[in-house]
Amino acid sequence: MARIAVIGAGMGAMAAAARLAAAGHRVTVYERLSTHGGSVGRFERDGFAFDSGPGLLHLPAVWRDLFVKTGKEPLEQCVELTQVDPASRHVFADGTDVLLPNASRAGTVSALEAALGPGSGERWGEFLGRARDAWERSRRPLLEEPLPADTSPFARDPYPALRQGLLRRSARTLGEIGTRELRDPRLAVLLGSHAMAYGLDPRTAPAAAAVLPYMEQTFGSWYVKGGLRALADAVYERCLARKVEFVLKTAVTGVLEKDGRAVGLELEHGGPVEADMVVSGAPVPSLFENHIVALDHREERPHRRPGARTGRVAVHLALRGGRPDDAVHRTVVHAPDPAAEWDAIDAGRTGPRPTVVVMRPGDPLLRPDDDHETVTLTATVPAALHGGQAWDDAAGAAADRMVEAAEAAVPGLRERILWREVRTPDDTRRDTAWAAVPAPALAGGAGAFLPAPNAGPLSALYFAGGWAHPGGGLAHAGMSGALVAGLIVEGADFRGSR
Image 1 (cartoon, one colour):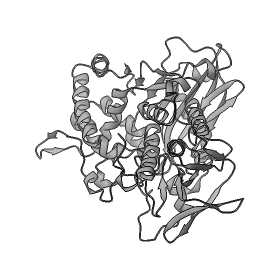
Image 2 (image 1 turned 180 degrees about the vertical axis):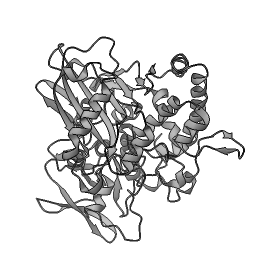
Image 3 (image 1 turned 30 degrees about the vertical axis):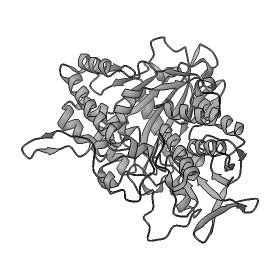
Image 4 (image 1 turned 45 degrees about the vertical axis):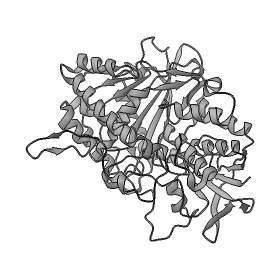
């Protein structure tokens, strides 16, 4: 039985902790905040409650596997899961409006054909077929196995892009897929919004990012009753049931090293802690920027990757008036000029009217009564503003633009607002130690879209969570916990989860 110290109580870290404790190890989690969950937080006021992180769950099988492997109670006995249908509504700048069903390729093709015109649904369906090929080629090595020492095979893009034009050149980016293969600006915007949700610019994201809409439209979107925070609470309770110890309000200031091996933690208060192994669920960038882990200057820092510059603004709205029965859980109100939106992000500015995701859960547990409604708006923004401007100074104007855009999804929204709470990348930094939001691992792009490997630069040091392989997203964080536990329990013989 090994003594394992875990940095942070985020979802990836807790997933690793529960699995390691179930394998017989003595696991202690050190969290600088007063609660668990990391980015899967909760904001409450006056009987209203909001998820302060992700609002929907994709690939719930990842978390079902965790609960099966760590106890007798399956996930569905711990939280109530429901499929969201329709999965999403999309409002385009020209006024086109389309509802996409949950986990139905045929239904999606029909909906797009009806809303966007003949041939549009067929082109999207053919694209999803190619995206499926990319998924099947990359799923196991990119999601279910640890990153190998030689990552050069991932430099090749698995998406089988069509070869078109005089030069017969295939699409190399997600944006080029939209232009060359989908051939409708609205379909291109729909495609790009799946990359934007993870902070990726479709103009530079590799063609392999086609797996993102494929995963969502194949495996569906799920809601956890009470909000995604209920899932974080369930994982925390599973850790406690497996005898994981949590030490809250305790910041880690360093990883102790001896002969190239991690041997414990240095704490801000309470002295050093000895350990046989260390698992860090903290954002990998913060570990090196804050000198918690020393890194040889010859090594490339593992957070210098596309997507690490973007964060999110969230606007939580407490509304008077009940939620209509025909309200859609998630609506994406697309920006009139996505290129200008990304130019502004690249320049570190809030820019023009953004793409806004409107979440209307319709969950009675999140509102004081049926005469009120909770709505959350989110937009992708620069993690840091140009010239060192504080997000607190820009948040109000950004929120105003988001509310204005969201009226396309919720008519009369501004007149219904009782109060609003605005959360910026600065709040993300306070909650998770890093302002940017990590993107999932993607093949292609010359290997630039790979996160940090789960095995750290020191022996007996491991990385879990969204900044470690296989990258950002709630499902990916759970996979990282499984990979770390496998590496520790099975050692060099571990070849990935089954």
